[in-house]
Amino acid sequence: FGSKDIGEKHQVPSVVLHALIEQESAKGSYLYRFEPGVYSRLKKTMQHTDHEIRMLASSHGITHVMGFNAMPRCNVHWSKLYDTQVGLDCGARLLRDSLNRHSQERDESKRIWLALRDYNGAGPKAENYANQVMAKVGALLIREQVNQS
Image 1 (cartoon, rainbow, N blue to C red):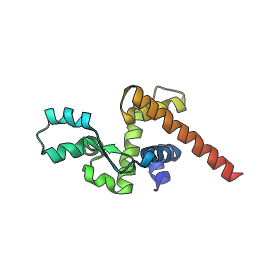
Image 2 (cartoon, helix red, strand yellow):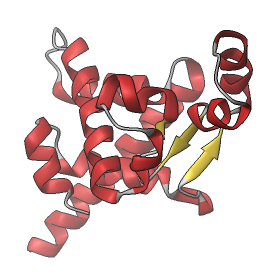
Image 3 (cartoon, one colour):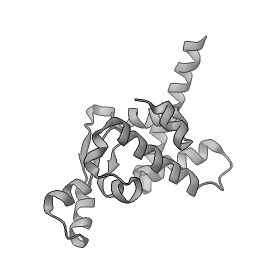
Image 4 (tube, rainbow, N blue to C red):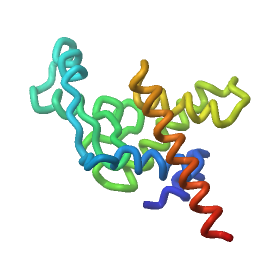
């Protein structure tokens, strides 16, 4: 997917991007996921068509970036997130922003965990998500070491 180049561009470890993509693709997940709770919140505050609100309240592409984040945080329309490179670039940018917010954290793995938690939202589900992605990071690093031996 070019995660190494995009990771370098945004100073995000490519193994973290790879693990994030694996997590977002887990359990038969598709490139689109509607979030009804987000839809309800956006519907109250936005003056868009119902279809556009639905797309803004959904995650898109291989990194499952929320539609409402695409334009303000990555300067792309949500529909562009289906281009693998655009979606990966936007996801890496969001992770970089979160890593920057946690720059005071000196433990790099804790900092990455915090960024992954933020990437998914807040609360116990987001913490579980961060744990799952970090487990994938570990598995990928072990696999890489075994393959180099």
